[in-house]
Image 1: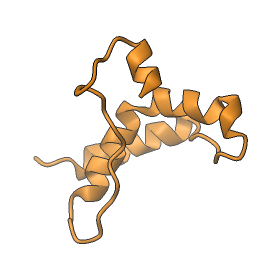
Image 2: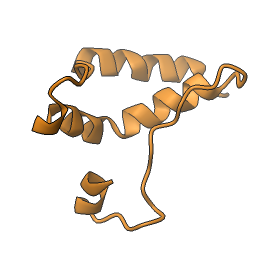
Image 3: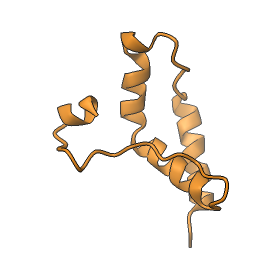
Image 4: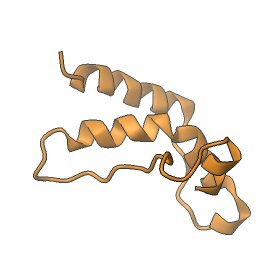
Length: 76
């Protein structure tokens, strides 16, 4: 949230990652879509000193592949 606040977002307008729900067929699409939207912020957070044990961020190539998957999964 603090990263979004730095970018000028106010309370009530913050975007959060969406968790995949196995019982919802389109939750993977929404999860990946929001991840790509917030990937810049996620990368900053993962690289911050407070998160030394954080998993690595996706590479630009991997993000591009996720975007391609989203094009396939998108509703018509």
